[in-house]
Every structure is written in C-alpha cells, then in structure tokens.
Image (cartoon, rainbow, N blue to C red; front, side, top):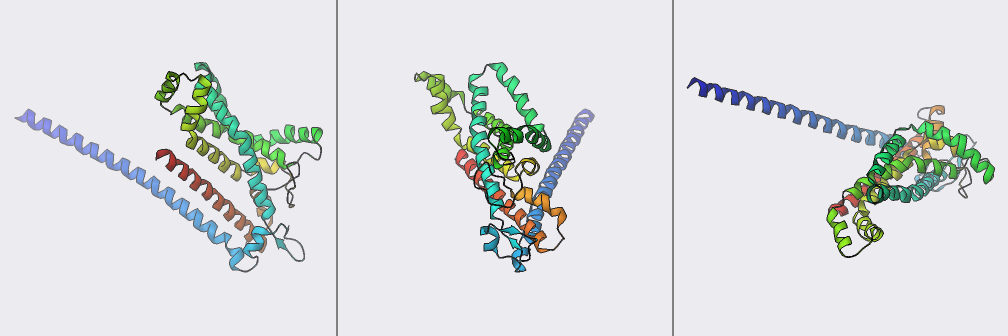
Length: 305
C-alpha cells in the first residue's frame, strides 16, 4: 500500500515538473514573440512618423520628392528630389540579382546534383565563410581591386554603378546559394527516380524536373538576396561615387538611398527640412523592403499550395 502511494506521489511530482517546464517554455517563447512584434511595429511607426514629416509640414511635396531628379539642399532655393537615389538603389539591386541569381542557383545545382559527396563538404564552408565577411571588408577589397580595374580597362574614375553591382553580386551570392541549395535538396528523390525511369539524362532530370519543382523557392532565394542588396549601405558607398545626378549608364557614378542617408545624416540639423527628407528616404527603403517581403510571402504561398 505504501509502495503504491509512493509511486503515485512520484508520478504526480514528475507531472507537475513537466507542466511547470512546459509553462516556462511557452512563456519564454511568447515573450520573445511579443518583443519581436512590438519592436517591428515600433520601428515601423517611428519611421513612418518621421518620414511623413516632410510632406505634412509642406516643406516638400510627395510628387516632387519621388519624381524630381534635382537634389540640392544647400542652394538658395533648395531642391529635394530623391529620384536619382531611388533609381540608383533599384538599378544596382536588379543588376546584382541578374548576376548573382544564376550563379547562386548553378552553384546549388552543382553541389546537390552533380558534385560527388566531397563537393558540398568543400563548397558549403566556403559559402558560409563569404556570409561571415563584414560588408566593410567587401567594400575595401572592391575599392582596392574593382575600382582600379574598371578605371584601367574601361575608363573613367572607376567609381561607378558597375563597381557597386559587382560588390553587391558577391555579397548576395552566398545568400542565394544557401537558400537555393536547401530548395533543391528538399525535392523528393521520387522525382529524380521517375525522370530516370522515363529515360531522362541527368541534365534533363535537373532542367525539366528538379528546377521547375523548386522554382518558387529559387525565386524566394533571389528576392531575399535582392532585399539584402537593397539595404546595403557601407560597401556600396565606398565604390559607387555618391553623386546626386541621375545615372546614364552602368559606368556612370551614382548614389543609393542608403549611401545618401549614411553620408548626410550626421551633417544635418535634427528637424531641418534636409534631415526630414533623409527620414523620408528611410521610409521609402522600408516600403520597398515590405514589398520584397510580400513577394516572398506570395511565392511561399504558391509553393505550399
């Protein structure tokens, strides 16, 4: 009788400890989630409140800010057109995605479908190493190697949109490759076996079966790479030239929203018109970043459908 009571008591204590541990775990996870949600909403609300000050105060019209190519805050009649920087940001982002996207997907296909087992063991650490390199190091290498190379082979000063595209392509390549690798690896072996059973070669299996099946995730990899490229500031700032004019080609110097913000935020008076326009540029960055997230969510929904 006493043994049975002791066993029941032991079970009750274990159950109470398990429930206590489960409650603490759930509380910890919920607290972390609430902090993340509050932080995101707070940043969004703060940036929105600061970014719209320019237009609420009537200092600059929204149409002028988004469509004018004249940026001259220190002139007698100041002008605050941010179009050249919006064009610069979108141009270097799209061009770097055009370079890094195919390279990253091809590298992922090589690691998963073509290379022997040692291939991924060698390439995966190399990709992880590229992810861990700070952006200032990328910028310094580009400043030392890419800018002189463009200047000596193509002409001009070397500080150009092309230099920014090259450095961004290298920076987002590991992101695209890593996500594309996971996407291709997650495809079931039944797809490959079925293709081989129908007489397909390895390349036909990759091109007509694996890549189409993984297409939504591959697009997601490219969009995530573009999101990183769009928000990058330091490395691009070091090589792109940082001029206020509208770029006419990839060899022209240009500027991005992030480079203009980082260059001028410390030299403007808080609450001034120029300072408010810099916040407005930050709001444009946030809006376009949200657009990237919406595209990723849409692609994920298609993948899960």
